View 1 (tube, rainbow, N blue to C red):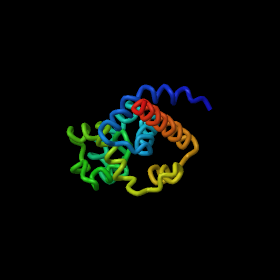
View 2: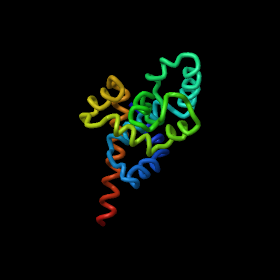
View 3: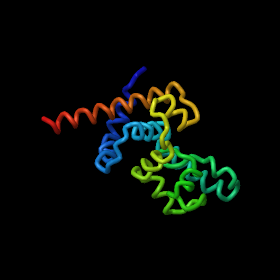
View 4: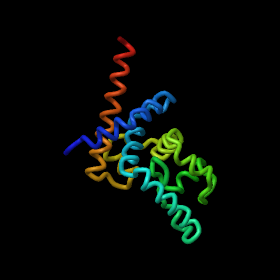
Length: 158
């Protein structure tokens, strides 16, 4: 498999990885999960999801519970259950919360809780199943994050 698209994506989001670490959000499995979701749900797709959120809230509110939103693509019911969103209805403040990478890290961390961190179990708990390509993307990002951590530890010691 060609890793070039993954490398380009990771290099583009390297600053986000450093932001997580600088703010004490240093669980590489959580960061790799978020990067994987960002890879599979680019900004245009997320914009469509936000439009669906607005439409569903008017036409079919029962669908809102299972709608996945945010950078981390977590179902709306979890965002409200953990108190990061006040209600299921779309509000301007909600969009800022869903686009905030630090709050997405916190939400992913709460959502996964004490889940087994083995890649297939973690992705199974997060996505419902661990598909081969998704597992490959997640593993690539996890490897790159851990390599960054190792390089920075070596630099700090040297």
